[in-house]
Length: 75
Image (cartoon, rainbow, N blue to C red; front, side, top):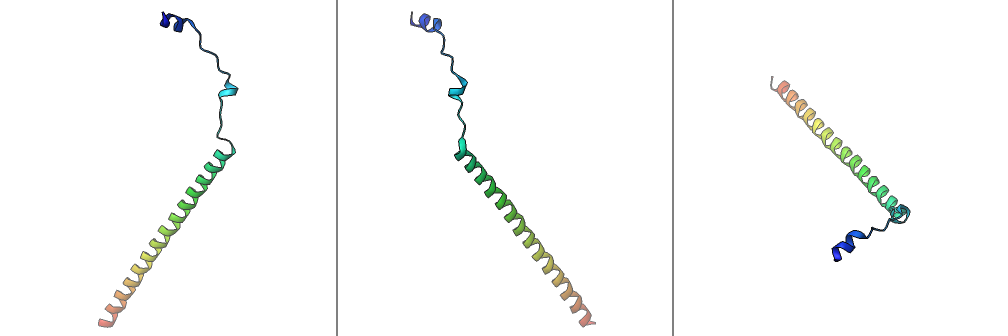
């Protein structure tokens, strides 16, 4: 009997304006801050990788010059 009553009743229609929730200003600030931090970290990582790559290139050039000057002195 209870299931018959439950099936016969209609569900109340919810007004979409009452059930729509947005994150608001706080959600926007949090999302903007997170995006800004991620962008800063990406730029910082690229800068550090570029610095390491340039240091290795300079070390290789110095080693090649030292090897060339050592070979010239031995002749």
